[in-house]
Image (tube, rainbow, N blue to C red; front, side, top):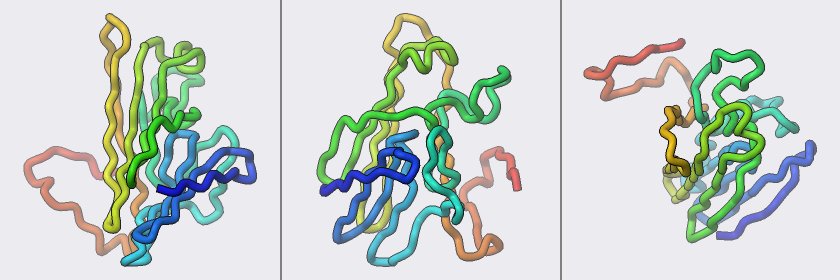
Length: 177
């Protein structure tokens, strides 16, 4: 897969992918998928705020943000909403045919906020029809910890009233809207 390394106006490093079947834009900060288009439909999969720019220190509002190790407020003053994973620079550790794997490790940046030793690996697998995302959280210490991990997608839809979610009839959920 041919990766094009770019820099946002803020200096944040980005990866652009332009393959015959799809195009994508990712940020090293938060390992966030910002844009994905399957060229057969020529339709952007994710919404991104139109005036949103990749700025230093702030997550992009839109795309596919990563939430780890907690969702929502932490309950502690000064701790970031939705954890720290979306605010930190990740390492690109693997580039194979149509997939990228990013890694975030516990460090001097994470320890004061969440004193746990971990490795979080996130793999994006791209195709002509979409993108699959897998995550593996490894505890690298002898101590146990609780963590929350989720993808927070901003799907692009033409009309909100036409959106339905199926298969939730047996599952409890909260509709924030």
